[in-house]
Figure 1 (cartoon, helix red, strand yellow):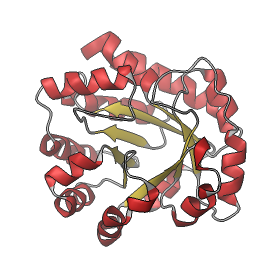
Figure 2 (cartoon, helix red, strand yellow; figure 1 turned 90 degrees about the vertical axis):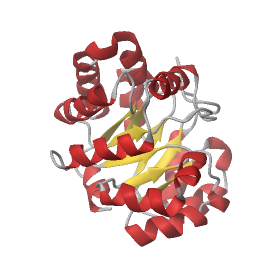
Figure 3 (spheres, rainbow, N blue to C red; figure 1 turned 180 degrees about the horizontal axis):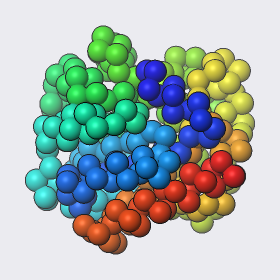
Length: 257
């Protein structure tokens, strides 16, 4: 938990997401180091799943490519363990309940903690059904990250009051993906959360431009970007590292501008 807290101590946090194994696990590992060098404060590692309900076409295609390339949870755990020997950058897994279930909930969470992960995000698990995961996460010291959306309304305070690590504020309805504009009143979501907890609030879903990063960071404690980075990985393949590193550098600067 302390590593996650540290991500929000150096100004506005910039949190990139990448799909593990796209284009390869070797590249994924190098991307983590490059993104940290570029200023990433916390990194979300997506464990690919064949039916990712919250994802738009960019991340869905990345999941398909990664799975076709032979990525497994065990290989991702091995990669995370290697990364942790080289860096203390906060890292959380983002995946789906089925991935955890099929691996064995306790086995998955225990292993994630052992290899040095700091948290877990399960976007398809509603707040009311989180306890079966939350109790195991508490046992092994892993933060189960809660999400709130514009439609959460009066539930925002309830969810925030029990949130761990940071609160993931979903800025757009629907699936992940680049948005030309974001009209959600993110500030109101953050305000409601802060009424009951001092949990850091990070905004994600749809953010892709420096202007959006700057605008969202003014209303929250951090900015999460996934699809725009995954798109670069798909576009450049094994040569994506310089492009991703420069993009993260610019977005981190914009969030703190």
